[in-house]
Structure formats: C-alpha cells, structure tokens
Image 1: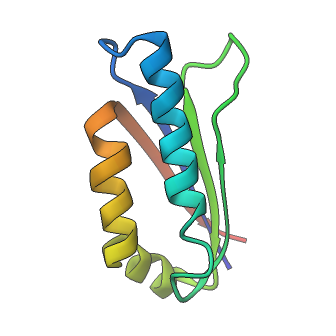
Image 2: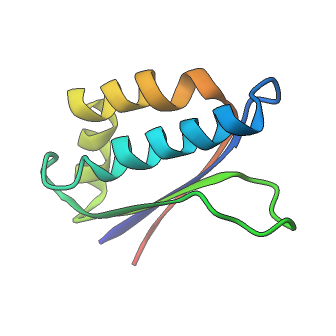
Length: 100
C-alpha cells in the first residue's frame, strides 16, 4: 500500500468566503473520486485546521501500490478535478508519497 499526502496553500488574493467555497469544491471533487479510479483505496480531504497551520487543505489518500498512484495522476477524472478545482486556486503544493 502507498500513502499519497498533499498539503496546499490557497492563493492570497482569495477572500475568506472564496477560500471557503474553494475548500468545499476541492473536498467534494477529490473525495468524489473514490470508486472511480482503480487502485484508489481511500481518499480524504481535510479543510479545517488550527491557526498554527501553514497549509489550508490536506489530501490523505491510499493506493494499492505505486503503479496505482501513477495511474491516478493521469486518470481523466483526477485531472479534471485537479485542473478545475485545485490548480487554479492554489499557490503552493507539498507532496509526500510513502509505502505503508
């Protein structure tokens, strides 16, 4: 099994209300991929964080293996969510993938 963890910072120019809407869209879009992509075992998006955090959105996903993670990256359903709901609104992304 492989964990795929991503932390995002949202763009500064977004208002508090826009950030709330963007977070909801990211969460709905990414969590909606469960059951659509082979090898994706579990997916969760965290949008509520403590003030001490320096990221605003976290993706915690689990895949059967590294090959499944690579296929997820280019799967049309994932690309649509990434291009439509994530990339336009984020300024920074940090990723860590590891075996569990």
